[in-house]
Length: 249
Image (tube, rainbow, N blue to C red; front, side):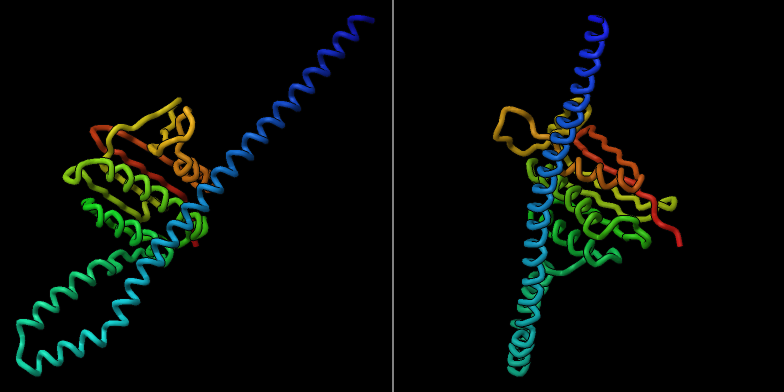
């Protein structure tokens, strides 16, 4: 009789332990999801501010367009061609700061890319960009922009920590073997890893190292759509490439 009581107690403890394990695991996942959601909300808000600032600059330039033409007409009438030449050079420099140079075929991707690359250019990061977003992506535009935003933010932050002469970024977006192929390479200093996972370079309030929530978000989106992510770091270059199957017509 005692044996059955003991066996029953063991089974009960096993069931309780299993339930507790799953409860704790779910609680941990919920906590991670909330941190990721908060992180993504802050990231999206930052991206929106950057895009709005870029568009404000464009609207401001267009608003002044008529005044620019009127000034040049006055100088032309007076024959002051040297003033017109200098004025045109100033306008060209001003326009370079707000011109949307990357057109991928996806409006939201254009906004994110140009915003991030504009930030990179201001930091004197050498850029090499080729981007064409294929049709038939399984993910939403928000998910695509989240992936792009995280990858580019990480690259810009890594470059910004280095001397200007070492900074560079190479970005490629296109279709390869029936899949979306996205590659970002950038100059990088020290890169930390823990148990095979890359750690964030951001400062932590605790003694524990921060894991890259942006990287985690990228991985989740790619996994959701049956894709592939590869990261490599060597010789001062950090490279991330991902592939996600594209829907066929």
